[in-house]
Image (tube, rainbow, N blue to C red; front, side, top):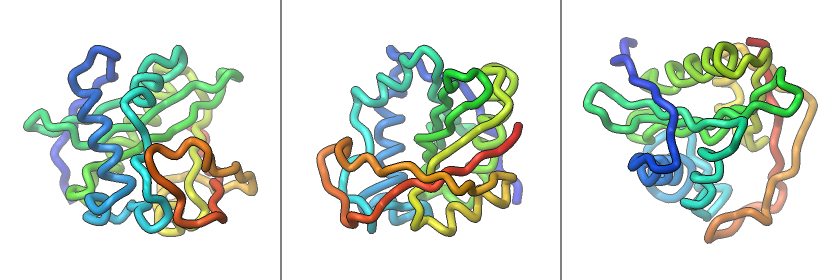
Length: 181
């Protein structure tokens, strides 16, 4: 499948796209709009995933960036967060969102590849890690097909940081995945 090339850039706090990042992330993760794609968490969580202040905090993080991917029309098609860990050898990959109406079309593969390139070449890290809610077998399998390994490590789900909503289950936690770059 051929997907048109994307244009990548790093979000800045004054960027007019900050609101678009917020809208994209919310639409891809939770709520009815997320059901248009295959990565929805709407059956697990009834909240907004992140707020405007949270997006700004990620953009302003001294060792992190939000990478934005625009399509050929200039529309924001996807985004992700990269955060260099204190050891300097590992980056966290998160806040990955692809427009739910455009999922399963190759955009996610392009963005993940660019995120890995950026993490290795610009952040100077050797490995990338991510956390995925343990129930998301299909999503975990997608990452495994792209070279990630599901580790035995788990991390608690941050129930206390839900944004304007609630969890629909009380047994959530994160499975950790890693890849050498």
